[in-house]
Image 1 (tube, rainbow, N blue to C red):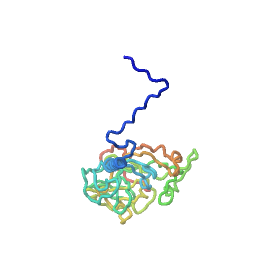
Image 2: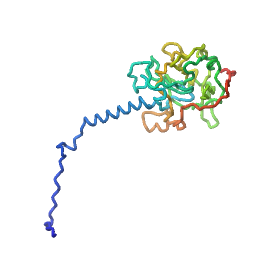
Image 3: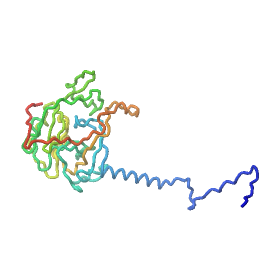
Image 4: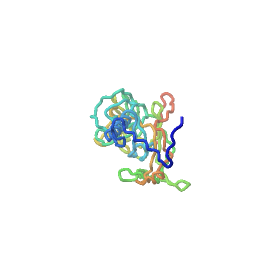
Length: 311
């Protein structure tokens, strides 16, 4: 079949624009749909933070040497069940009810929300429901037996760290332990101890002065409660502190425990500014992805190590 020739120089006709079948303007933004999409994403993030995991920032030095101010970490929300404190924002009324409740293990690092505090705190579980606990000369006496506590080589805390705690450098409390290393860098080397709990969970603590919280008479941890302490023993307002509004005031209800610290994502040393270019130089590169679960060291049966060294 012979097709007819087009005339020389003629321009083929453009196809007519295709109209949307429903008559709507395809270039118009549906703001209602966009808003609903953003709302759905926000609700999904809040649900994930409330039920699975959320980020957490370390604001104080109470958990040194294992956690430093400026550490950013991930807290899992499900290990101990869910309660009012699990919500990403504490908008639910305080309650003792828990869904799928479970009990922490010795040595777990947990997030807790004291009744009077505006922010969550972070501490370590050192006694479980039904345990008796006392403190003598800074040494934990658990169920009538001193836990294993050994002198360790001092940790080295970088003296160039610029993080602030209550308006002063967080490391100034260790000023008498400042030393200069052979390479010329300065560090703080405070007295360091290794504690090991009955399940073998082992971790480092700092204890460098005699102070009132080094002594606590024996008490029993009630059912549904845990006893929490900070690893920086002379600078932690924890379950040993009974003064209203200052510490945790004894054992903490498990319904106030909001999750378990899992690992550090990244850490900043305080030298960074609002300029993103400064963030790279402020990174503590050796802390990223560090696990916060305590190492487990098997102990001989009935093994204890009384503290004979003092502070």
